[in-house]
Image (tube, rainbow, N blue to C red; front, side, top):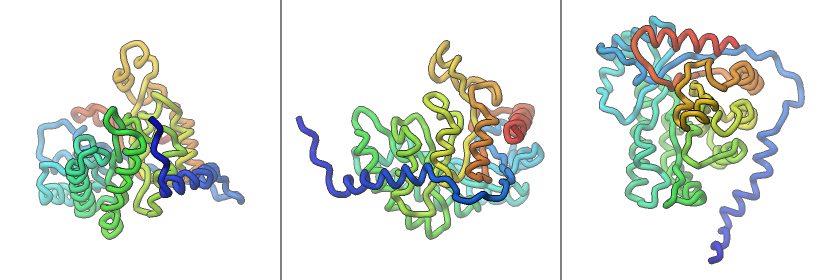
Length: 302
């Protein structure tokens, strides 16, 4: 059976690919001042695995030298308790992670499921604003046997556009994360996806370790450039993947996998990135969190 003809909007989207690729490869015409690397160190709140009130967990992160924390939203945390913990500890909440984006995907065939995903994203945007954050991390779509690539592309963009006015009103950036969702599999396509929204409140939340399974982080950093608004920090070992199975690739400590951190840091410097870098790895008690902080410091200095 023949594929249906591409409709006008799809033709226009693909016609713009050349311009998007050119933008990804653009090189400054004149020399720029040296870039001063400034990375802010954070963890996901779920990594803090100590039996203590929320305010004490925030205070622990502050004492260990973390600059901030990221929360899930929607969640069962009481907003007033979150704000009290933030204010008492002095530890900023730099953003939230959309907690429903894998269950109520914005690419689901069922409009009712997509509507739930939109509601979850709106909730996360409002929480990010309430807590003083700047981003909502979002997995924009999932491709599968029942969802084609084109459907994921069209549906997710349509649903995100419904929410974008709220993000713009509240000053929150919707930041797409590269995950193993079979979608946006090249950095040039990822850049185009962001650019098509034509909004300063859409960007990329670049996960360094997630790329290593099928690419090189530095290549993506170079191509995505200014679209990268924040980083997730994790490792991946190709050897463990090959020897023990795909997900075992993540079972290595920071600095002990196949992320070439000096090259990654150089690529970030070249795009003049500064801002939040959040560990997304197995957490633990105070000793474990201290180790994570120390390893992140070594990565940032590499």
